Amino acid sequence: MVEPVPSSAAEDEPERPGPDENPEFGKSGRNRRKKPKGQRSFWVELPILIVVALALAFVFQNFFARVYTIPSGSMEATLHGCPGCYGDKVLVDKITYDFTKPSPGDVVVFKGPEAWVEHEAPPDQSSNAVVRFFQNVGSVFGLAPPNEEDFVKRIIALGGQTVQCCDAQNRVLVDGKPLYEPYIHWEDPSVQVQEPFAPVTVPPGDVWVMGDNRNDSCDSRCQGGGGLRGVVPVSDIIGKARVIVLPPSRWGGVSDTNPQTTSPPSSALGMSAPGWQEGAPLGFGAVAAWPVLALGRRFGAGVRRAVKRKR
Image 1 (spheres, rainbow, N blue to C red):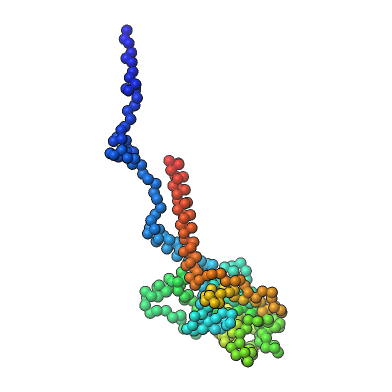
Image 2: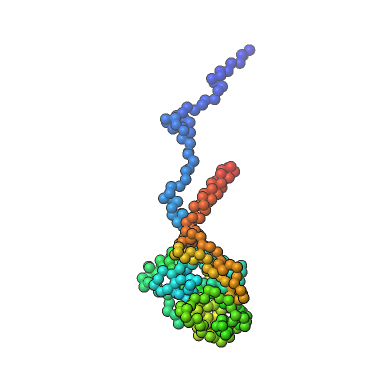
């Protein structure tokens, strides 16, 4: 009878690879497991941040708000401006009229209607093609003045209303009622007389605009020869002037007093000025780029973890 050979514990135990044979160890026995990837270096993230900042600035500039320079004195003393001087920088809200309609008293920036600009010289641009390219790019992202032929005036009458000047007290009339205009600026306080004009019924979809510096503003009274050629289509309105952002000495809200009221309103200012700067669009993009990038990185890490779990 053949006896079974007793087993040996050493023979039954599976062989364990030594440090030199273990694929997770190197020749020195050190762990060769891959370390988790760290954050990208600053120089790798910098171009991404720049692209994100520019994209956000583009969105802010074209859909939410934009800073404009007041080029002339036609809106004194509400808005200061003059050729060759440092005019007010005004933040213009571009989304208000997506939800509401323009109202009398709103100070608006608008593209010059065809009748207003048909005899105007084109905006000054460099003769150098490369410089022109960067001017156009800078305008899109808020780094240079816009290249449109834009104007800033105050809405006096809406479509369907009849406007004319003046009554016995030298006041503009809308639908036969005198306007309350505390914002009017007289270059010569001793001569507070407005140039009269015949009644004009504003067509639906248009507005009648005038400058606060009443005797030094070419507006709906004279642009295009005046009359119906001086009205501005609502579709040409870019936005509502909200805040003077520069210079700091003039920080404040832009008055939007309704001139069709018969008594002084309780509040003449729209809103107080925060600490905006001229580069508001680009600043918004730069500030928002960091959290957007951080959220993108966190989202990407979550996706990678989910993919690993499924494997």
